[in-house]
Amino acid sequence: FYLYIDEEAMSKTIIVSNRLPVKVTEEDGQYKVATSEGGLATGLGSVYQSGDNVWLGWPGVEVAGDDKQNEVTQKLAEVSLRPVFLTADEISGYYEGFSNEILWPIFHYYASTYANYKLADWECYQHVNRKFADAVIAIAEPGDTIWIHDYQLLLLPGLVRATRPDISIGFFLHIPFPSFEMFRLIPWRSELIEGILGADLIGFHTFDDASHFISAATRLLPVNSSSNIITVDDRPVVVESFPMGIDDEKYGALTRDPEVVSEINYLRETFKDKRVFLSIDRLDYSKGILQRLQAFELLLDTHPEYIGRIVLHMIVVPSRDTVPQYMELKQNVDRKVGDINARYRTLDWSPVHYFYRPFPINTLSALYHVADICLVTPMRDGMNLVSKEYIASRTQETGVLVLSEMAGASKELIDAVIVNPSNIASMAEAMQTALTMSLNEQKRRMRLMRQVVSKFNIKHWVKLFMERMREVKQMQQSMRSR
Ligand code: F6P
Image 1 (tube, rainbow, N blue to C red):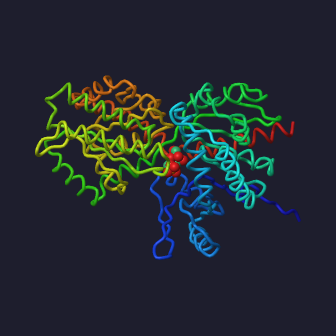
Image 2: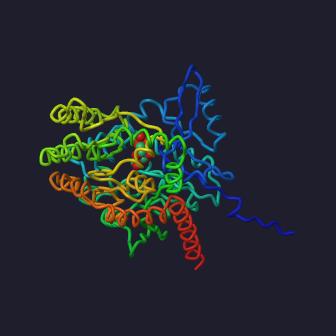
Image 3: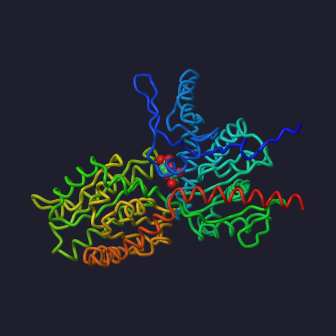
């Protein structure tokens, strides 16, 4: 008898990200796990919830003590999740410190203003990446595929590779990869590249990010590259762009949900004689919130005929509020909104409706559907999924997207009104262009963008990456057997 083992069928996929795709909360000593509506969670849902597959990451809260950790571990196991618990010091050094005070600003081109190179944070980042590696190695078996996500875990591919040389590892960066001149500023730049190169397939949102990475790798390390393949100790590593999409069908269907429809009707009544600008961002200096407000103010300055007739509905979702730069930004945004409203408001009208809190997806859907213009004007953004959510929610096929050329999405959504977010005057002009665009022109552009968002959706993105992983594995096997 021959025992035939189908390795592919027996193997599993392990997804790893800093944060698990759920919200864990504690109430009266009891832990609750709520599913997340996030794009990555939705897209990878079909992957980690099938077979023995699993998603590994930090539950997002500090859980101290074995009993509590066991309770959370059990609750998460029911939904195919495995926690990596972090202590308060680890959260401070690895997450707030190295990830968000060094990598985030550098990768978003904010080097001189914000990067804060602390050796202790680097040590903590290495330590936590090792902690993640131990958790992966404890469950990884030969034939498994590991898909690691984002800048918090740049060392993880290398750490796993060192112990499991034959395992298949994919890595995807959700934020921009900066040009070499920016990246080289980081004191530990070579170690970071070595870490990423532990993967077999390295994915970025855009072609530019992929080429910046290849340039940094070949300039910092003794590795060869030919086209998009970097050879590391005879192991080919493939570097490619995979622009991430959204679940467009979900956003389309939401606009027909009775609860959303009643919110839409309410909003239409509220805004009945106004043109509505919408913006939705996490609170982050990379999102260009202050610059957008300046442009809106300039529009009111130069076009007083819009006073009382336009509204900027601005949702800012609290984020990383323990990091000093984010606290400072919050104060500046508060002040700027206050200034604009104080200058222009009338007894029955305020130009900026500012909300500093998260909203349920139904409300966001209704807002996307009702807003005449969506402003997505980050100073730098890996992709920006809000722009795609707006397009997917425009089932009526009108509406204008004003989109920063610094967002990865601008490479795909070329029929948006594209702006340079540093050029305040041209952003104000783009707002005016959007306000005066004919319905026919809006429809022409919107239909083209809706085709892009629907064709390159999240399912397509996951499928493409997973298929490419298999191809790279086959390529490596055939090279080894030569
Ligand atoms: O897209 C970048 C990213 O840091 C993701 O990794 C993360 O899911 C999201 O932004 C929110 O960030 P945080 O986990 O720091 O709240």
